Amino acid sequence: MSYGVCILSVVPLRGEASERAEMVSQLLFGDLYEVLEENGNWLKIKTSDCGYEGFLSQKYHHTLSKEQFQELKQAPQSMVSDFMTLICEGKTQTIFPVFIGASFPKPDDQGRFQMGNAAFTLPSWSEEAVENSEFKIQHSESETTFSSQFSVFSFQLSSMLEFAMRFLRAPYLWGGRTPAGIDCSGFTQLIYKSIGVLIPRDASQQVELGQPLDFASEAQIGDLAFFQNEEGRIIHVGMVCGPGKIIHASGQVRIDKLDDTGIFNADKGQYSHQLRIIKRIL
Image (cartoon, rainbow, N blue to C red; front, side, top):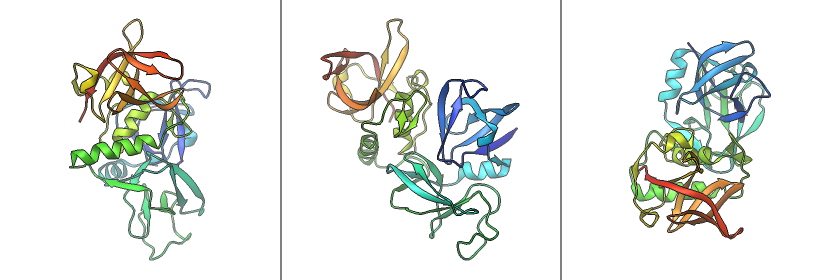
């Protein structure tokens, strides 16, 4: 088995080994994965955070050894908590954006970190002898460091809400995980990642977590509400963001009213989603 890490801002993960196949998710900068199969110019991979499987083009693949993979997986992480931060790639000195929700090893005092290959050995940032897996934060004020879950529960809730609000008006995109386009379960997954809690990628998997609530009036900030179609299949998820309110990705990331019936869209004057269950994860 081989391993890899995403060293671009964001790359698509496909449902099949084809550029024309449906985008089922995205890898963000710093995401680790295992390679399950090779299929010509395509790799079938499994993400290390939630075990999500999909097909990645070989042109996006950055190889890691097993030792490098384990080291990066266990390292304390910094996560971008603002819309984006700028990172300089060491070998070419190229500066590129990394989006909210992306995570990478905690930088040193000079904002430097590496993802595979040789660690920094030079006393100062230099193009000489620097591998293309080494990076430097250009703006470090928009990152949060975590190694597991925060210990103060009230801080968790306010932190999650603040993080979620930064996605308001982000357009809906099936498989998306950035402010340029995001889907409902990718949104809730990133919200929980912002406090160091890793949950599955899809709504049908997320609904298996936590404890059910009897009524919408019992819900508190951070609870996840799940919605069903006429066949009873889970098709949507959002996060409770206040009494009788939900923030979710539907057309765009928006806040709507939530009750025991479902989501009421005030713009259309009707219910848009039928409530199935509300689960308390934390």
